[in-house]
Length: 151
Image 1 (cartoon, helix red, strand yellow):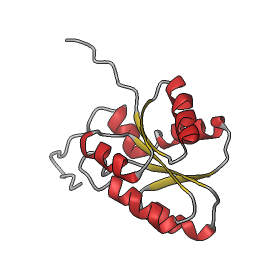
Image 2: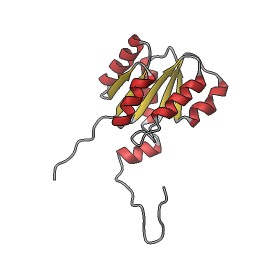
Image 3: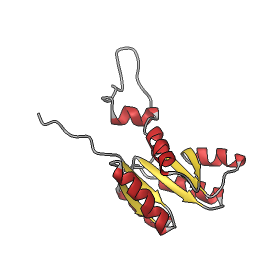
Image 4: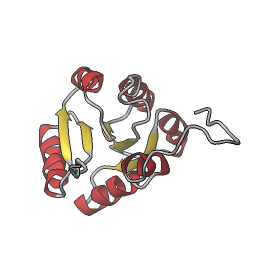
């Protein structure tokens, strides 16, 4: 039996600024991540329809509700339903927590940021329990003699 190598995680980066977009991709690529770059939501939606991403980096300026709606749209495919979102915002406000969390957000990082902080949050996102089980541990059975898993 061949030993299948685990593929590096695939990250969708949605950022309208081309310099920041390529900069983040370069940082993540250097660490071994695979990246798909999108400068607008339409391109990102096309990508999520055909590619299973492990993480979405979603950058936005001011409109938190538009960002939450866009992230929800990206996660509205069978390939991306459980994909966590790391939001990148021009600024932070306390009342943004709930809408971003409901849209699948696990972290929100204010811009500008240091590359090390971005890498740390990306690594933390991959330590979330549902991703760790899917990527590292063998799949658990859906049933036993005493119970049935419903989810």
